[in-house]
Length: 301
Image 1 (tube, rainbow, N blue to C red):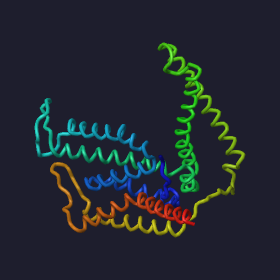
Image 2 (image 1 turned 90 degrees about the vertical axis):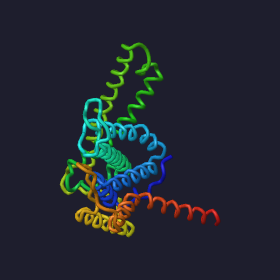
Image 3 (image 1 turned 30 degrees about the vertical axis):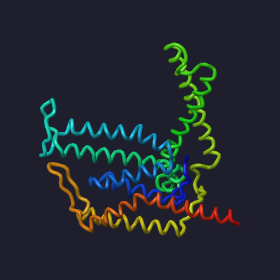
Image 4 (image 1 turned 45 degrees about the horizontal axis):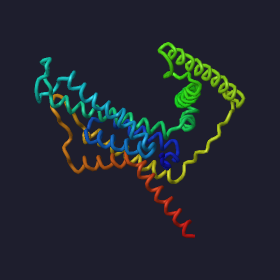
């Protein structure tokens, strides 16, 4: 069951800035603790957003992908000085290549998980609101593309179920009949997509899209809560940026494993990063507690 996400109700600038920060640090920092915290934070937020569907996605897609990355890197990358054994091909299996494979798998899984949260929070109207005036054509194309994919998937499910009811599904009959049914479903979907494009174009034209002086309606307001969250994000960004520039988050795997020593400064940087990754969850938990408290007060009255 999907939970009510209070973080999604924040201003689009807050949502976009948050995902930009976490994705930037996750993709460009090789520190294992940073990647581990990012992976945990993204999975927890994805589970909060999508419930059991996020769990199934993690088990069915993220976990096999991480295992594959972990296996492929040591098989083809033989850098490092700590040789554990030799492969049947004669190439060495090094500890550094294994640990780098673990970090690469965690980074890839964390980035994909963060992007799944991004698609759930940053809707097309938020994207157009942020970039509609700066890059109007590109923002429109991107928003329409992102909206078209789930819409096409839902319509495909409707058409497939309808065809199944009349015995013309891709799983019915011989191989030739299945191919013919699949072509029929594909033809229906292409026709639907073209008709949908024409209707969208007519709707945009009737609403004055592209005319000079046209204004856009917006329901977003930058309130005090958004200002507080923005201040927190700026603080985290400054602290993490300072830590990266001073080497507090540095880490390397080749030729030997070496990283920043565990000092109070490093611990402080990691705590700031953990707080940043868990910010949406903390906001949602606080909102849930406030909601339950108000509900209990109403029940008592």
